[in-house]
Length: 311
Image (cartoon, rainbow, N blue to C red; front, top):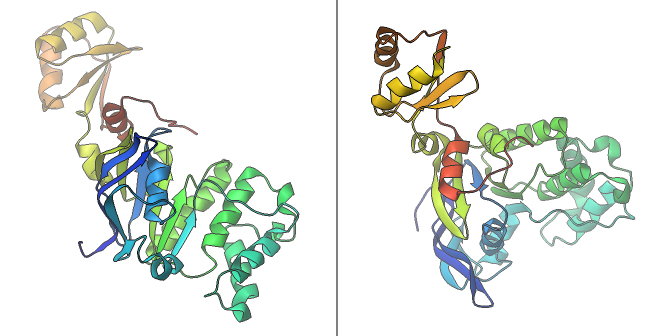
């Protein structure tokens, strides 16, 4: 397998009762990256993560975490991996700090002499110090998510795997998790984030991959994914909407009305050439702007399905 990758898979697949849940997935997650794993619900993201962590055995292919094959080397690799998968599970009758102490005591590699300090640092890092003594049954969903992240951070990790880490968080909590992820990446931890929230991936990640119906349909840096998206668009503000559409279509650009604007993919045309030509054709122009192709454009084109873009 390749050097410089925290996660690598080849032909990874999983069948459940004769149905393919994941097919031929080839992930390449660079060391030190914040890697977004995107896809609509049911696209195979969580099944893939469970195979990466050795929780489910693949029926095809192989996975390598931190240079070691999984699940064969799970006992040696997983202590270096922190994970929050399918939501945290805690004892509601215990406080947040007591839950972390219980989980840490079950870790044979955790040092009991530093337990109190490490728990305090982890809770502080996710903004739960004030709620450390409160019973978890009184926690909101967002607080439970943050407690799950704190559990993953009880010891230094080379890789952090987070499945929907901002689920249930308010905007402030979401910003805190985003800042935490950036801090971890700066410290050298590779962070693998599964999400369906495009805005979060754009603000949090350096790389991303897209799943659709169990298959990996794209991956790369965010700039590479944007560059593979549809063309940048021309937005033209004009009172002569119909005439502008006619002129742009005649130039080979499939223009459409959008409120008071006319929108058309540039398809390699220069704005500085198009605008004078439109003016020469008698079309009055009140304003012009261009918009870069977005990750949303790319993902919708790849999956044929919508994403939760705003929340």
